[in-house]
Image (cartoon, rainbow, N blue to C red; front, side):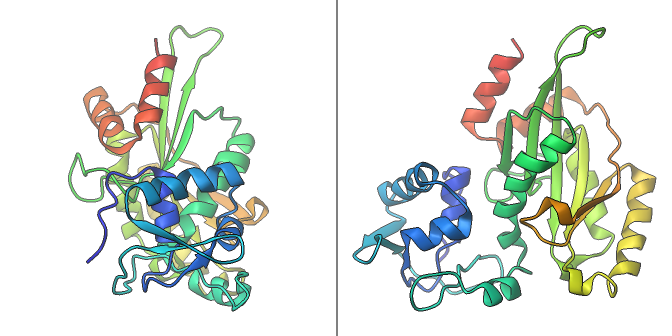
Length: 273
């Protein structure tokens, strides 16, 4: 039986899904390296999972953890693949990264750091929203990653809230359905993007599919971005720029209340005062 992750923080969800579903243990150092987290961030999430009874600690070099309840492995789980000494098996990780869920943590970090800098955004928050919350406006209404920014302008009065969404897709899901999912998100967002992981060795074979998606996205104002390496912004390319829209305030308010963390909601409230 799968654990209920709806009450967890974003980092707790990410760490929980990085643990093997069969209940086998992984060391704290290897998980920190895999997730690219510092010590404080890692142990805050780990201790939260331990306190909630979802993760058990064990003895081993650097300390080890495992899921409290093993599950049957399915396509929606991320498995951290390690060799016997507890270090990442790079080749097998690259083979497994086609799983969409495994793309969320590295792409979130790149969006927060490099994407924001390139697009001159001062982001209040970047959250993985695929793993929790409700669906306030029907099917496809929960994006994978959401960013929040409050902007001000020299000659335009007031504060302006930007909520941008990203629909993340693996190489096996390069099709126009991604555009319609992003369109569903934009009912409550200012910009929406489709972000495809396209490994460099598959770029040629997927070129026609990407071009077909880009053409449909262009007609609807949806942004399209490809990433040759989820961890490296130098391999990302923005094929279509997302068109900014003003969503219905009620839908935007409902989205923020249902999808974003309490901390982010509090920050938004303070910044808009």
